Image (cartoon, rainbow, N blue to C red; front, side, top):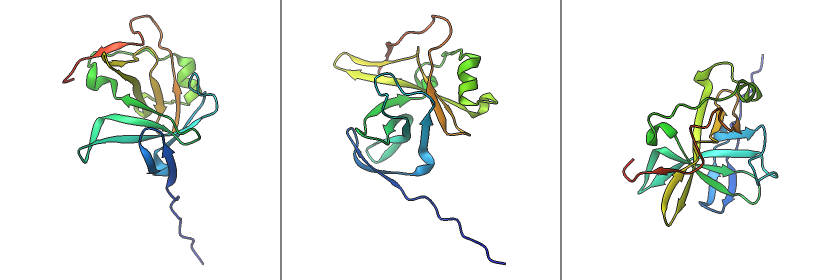
Length: 155
């Protein structure tokens, strides 16, 4: 009887607009079930750790497009900055992601950095089904959150 050895997937080479040339571990790749607004041509992304002074940040990552034009978004674990964040994701959105249980869900909020400071879009987080490696930007139920919550320095 012969056995075949599984070959790991080769890294994905990306010419990132934000990060420069990077190699992405295919295990970090995720597929959006719907494109992000304004980026209809891209459904493949990867979560890439943010590195500062040689150290990975556990709270900040890059949502790096794996398709041209290789754009990237800064994303964060919302609870690291807003500990009381209590998002309500609709059953339809959870179903579109195939989320059978909440343990598989990971949430990320898109950060915007400007001269005035940093804001987080708590209204429309990106929900990732870690088990299926699928994702979707969802608009939360209710009106408790908006798209420009100020992130305080030191948070």
